[in-house]
Structures are given as structure tokens and as C-alpha cells.
Image (cartoon, rainbow, N blue to C red; front, side, top):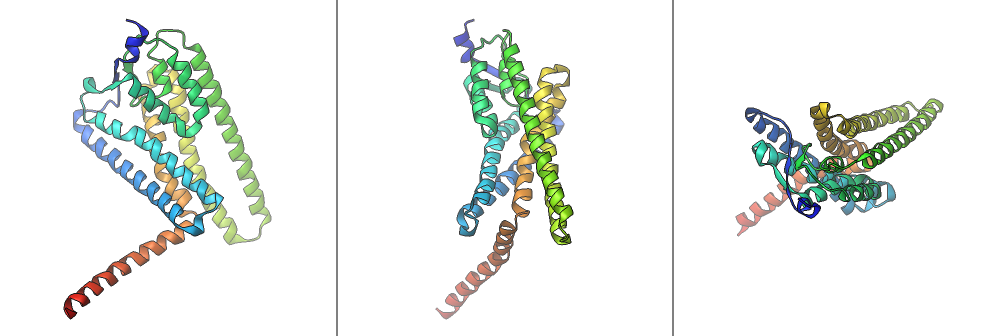
Length: 283
């Protein structure tokens, strides 16, 4: 069968291996995680975009983060939840849909890199039809080929190591500078705030770094496929769910806006209801 036929073929997504009894509990957990992630991130976007006091570069950066989280989570979870309720033999996806999903899985992290990676993958012919992952990504796509994929593997590993090292070094330098400032400062309140903020940021970063490293590098070791699947799902669920709490509620201006909205809304509703009752009584 020629390459053109495979490019328009139907692929089978391996998905998560869950029993029939546990499929609904897993679905509910993922559904609740998805709803929380979408609502919290969209709320953060709405507050930053509508509040003029938050229209500065720092908060625009915070706004970009939830947009990326919404994209990354929406590309993964709806399809994953749908597949959980299906039989393993019925989890089909077209090749082009798989390519599009793989692109958007990565595009919000490093678009230029993954355009090149997808390009290296599309040049390959395909002799397999099973995606060995809960969703489509670049590594799953080039595993469809029977050709030599050493270039794809080498490029993926080298780039991942470079990005991971640069990220770790930049985080280390930043935290060292913060620690030096805290040591020099005699302000206990400021130091306490810095420790609280940095600890939550570091926790989210470590979760993202470890889960990301698990599913990137374990793609090369088929015997650890279930651990890789768990790491890939954690990478696309936990950080997007925690980011609004860490970067939103930890920011003084956003926290005050949320508290103000939460306090004023019940009173506004009560006032509107009272005005309506008064109008009905007068008329």
C-alpha cells in the first residue's frame, strides 16, 4: 500500500487501559479536572482583559499562560474522555486528525521546533496503524513508520535535553538571586511572601518537568508504556489546573479583584431582587 493511502488511513488510538468498571470513575475525574481547568483559566483571562488596572506587561504574560493551558487541555481531554467510554477496538482517528492534534499538543510550548519535528515525521511512509499513546503526538506519529527514524529520535532527544537544561539553569539562577535578596533583606514579611510564592511556583515546575521528562524519554522504552501514558496525562492536566491558582491567586492585584467580585456579587444580586420586589409592591 502506498504512502498516500496511509496518509488518509484510519488509525487506532491505544488509549488508557482501564477496566469497564473503572471507566466511568476515570471519566468523571477527568471531566471534573477539565471543567476546573477551563473555568479557572477562562476566569483569569476574563479578569485580566476586562480590568484596566491589570493591563500591563506582567499581567499580559499571565494572560498568555492560561490561553496556552486552555489550548493544550482542550486538544487532549475531550478526545481522551470520549475514548475512555469506547471499546478499545473502536478508538479510531484519521491520520490528518492525528497530525493536527499532535501539532496543537506541542504548538503552545515551542511552535518552531515542532513545525520542524512534524515536518520530519510527515516525510516518512507508514506501515502501522496504531497510536501507542492516549493521544497523538509527534513521537507516536513517527512510530507508525517502518523506516529508520534515528534522525527524529536524535533531534527530539537533543532538543528536549537542551530545553530542559536551559530551563533548569534559568530557574536555578532566578531562585539563587531571590535567595540572595531575601538573605540581604531584613523584612520578614517580604521574605515570607517570597518563600511562599517561590515554593508554589517550584512545585508546579517540578510536576511539569518530571511528568514531561517521563513521557518524552519513555517513548523510547516500550516496556514502560503505562508509566509514559500516566506522565503524559499528568503533564496536560496538573500544571494547567494549578497555574491559575499559583499565578492568579498569588498575584495581589488579581487576588483582590477576585475577592472584590466574590463579595460584591451577592449584594448586587440581593439589591436587584429587592428593587424588583419594591416595584411589584408599588405597582
